[in-house]
Amino acid sequence: MNLFLVIAGGILGLIVGSFLNVVTLRMNTGKTIGGRSHCMQCNRKLDWWHMVPFFSYLFLRGRCDFCKSSISVQYPIVELATGIIFALVISRFGFHVSTIWYWIISSILVVIAVYDLRHFIIPWVPNLLLAIMGFITLFIPSLHFVTGNSWFQIPTMWNLFSGVIIALPFFALWLVSRGRWLGLGDVKYMVSSGWLLGLLGGVSGVLYAFWIGAAWVIVLVLVQTIRKIIAPGLSAEIPARVPFGPFLVVGTLLVILSGVDIQALIQSIGLVY
Ligand SMILES: [Zn+2]
Image (cartoon, rainbow, N blue to C red; front, side, top):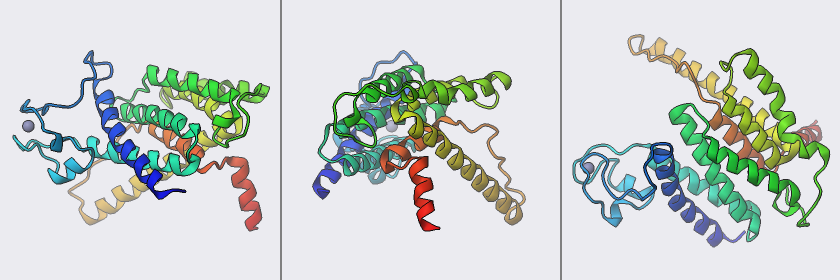
């Protein structure tokens, strides 16, 4: 893979990431998306060197150049994450239309994850876009995460209903728990990602999400326990709710970027033994 292309993809990702920050902050607030050209606190107009994605945050040490109020750490994190994802996408798909397809899809995924982290809601507009793009992907093997060579196919029944098949048991859980175990947004997301990845890929994405989510909770509990032993006075409790959306997004990205679904995973373990 051409290193220049990967770096260019990463830089594009940093720029897109800074746009996605604005989108997630202004979505459902009635504000228009007009760029971040003023400081949120002192309202002073920012110069270009205050707005270089990721690097300005480092250079300014996380503070406004004028009033020294702190800039949300969300900015550099989202910019860097998008940059890394974009670089990984182009290093996987190369100079191919799939790269642009998955750049758009990963931008939608970043918005969903960040919005869910902030508001505990998976926003319906990006989720609907994801569902539409996922449905289109079913018909175009060249755009599938395990890229085929043809530009049209009639999907199998399993793949055509993959989103619904995957989401149905979780919809039942949502009904039974009256939305306490997972949100309806999570269920709808599973429909979108099921279409995007096909039945096997979609199941894999959800399973990866549960594994990573479980690992995350275990790490949180461990950190908490260790902190209580070392400094009993400083006990910040584990957050009562952890949004599931970001884990679903990471699971989806893992499938897209690695191209490894559950079947491939089991086969590779089979080779080891
Ligand atoms: Zn300021």
